[in-house]
Amino acid sequence: MLAWLTIVLASVPDTVEKKSGLPQLNTNDMAPQLIWLAVTFLALYFVLSKFTLPRISSVLDERKNRIERDIAEGERLNSETQNAIAEYEQKLTDARSKAGTMVKENRDAVTADLDAKRLVAEAQDHARLAAAEERINAMKSEAMAQVTTISSETAQELIKSLIGTDVSADEINRAMQPAAGE
Image (cartoon, rainbow, N blue to C red):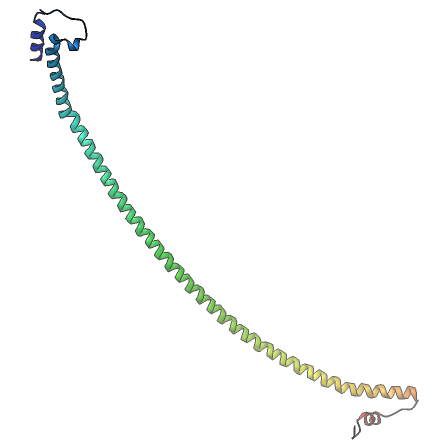
């Protein structure tokens, strides 16, 4: 039909003189130009409405659905992350509490063990100290007993060397005894 219309319009003799100027504004050529404008517009409208716009619409719908799925997935992952963080914080708090309890129990056990060992060591030290004091007192008594013997022997030797006479140990011991009034 378009071809026929073009042939008909082209075969119409030009009775009007062509004027110089813009061909778009030539009133004799306006009818075919308007027809071709309508044909082109209708063809473009048909192609756009049947092929291009449905594709664009489906791409936009798919994109919208993908964005909504991605947002939903992001919210789900965010919720899981928040739950994991809360669970981690709870486990961390529990672990700290348990560690504090264990430290306190260990400290108490070590303190009790040290106290028991300290008491045993103190008892052993007191026993050693008492034994040492007994040995010292025994040595002191023995030394005091020997002092009397040594002093009487020394006195005998001094008297013998000074005076030249022998004096008995009994006489020296009586002389070394304090008098009743002293």
